Length: 203
Image 1 (tube, rainbow, N blue to C red):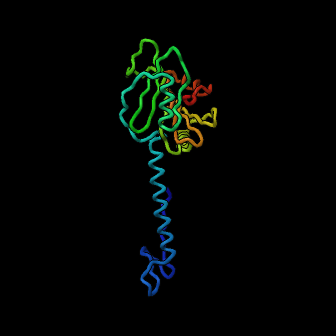
Image 2: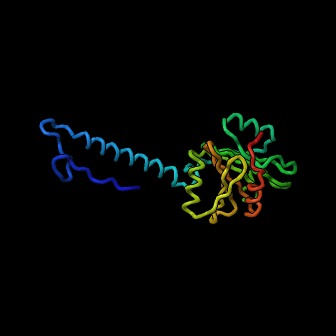
């Protein structure tokens, strides 16, 4: 952030603010400058807190127990939490594993035949929906810092592939304080799922 400049009084100079003659009170100009400095510092702190996570929420709450869920239950969960929950749509040959965290993250994993709910291996397609204030601005800022290109997708969304995490594609939409992450062990498939328009809210 920019360093605030030093303010001087109207009838002198130096590090201390001059006082109006005979009043014992700071000048109006000094009060305005001081207020501007305080406001700039507050804005800087807020931006740092939002951006320091690289587009991801800072909280790392432990997940609640995962469980198998039908499409109808996924829809009910989405309605109950008051914001969209994203997935790649119905996949009849897979089991939908639903897990949530106390800070509001929702994960839907697609488990193939033979995989058990709660399997800790990172081998399965997963779509995560995370609360993220100013999600689109945060994602664009992350792209600018890393030099990574963004891709426009359906519904005005923007997708980002971070080269340091190529198995995940991050998505944000206008007017939604949500970040969507699409993970697949195959970076190519993760990108294809996003660019093909398959990512959509559970309905």
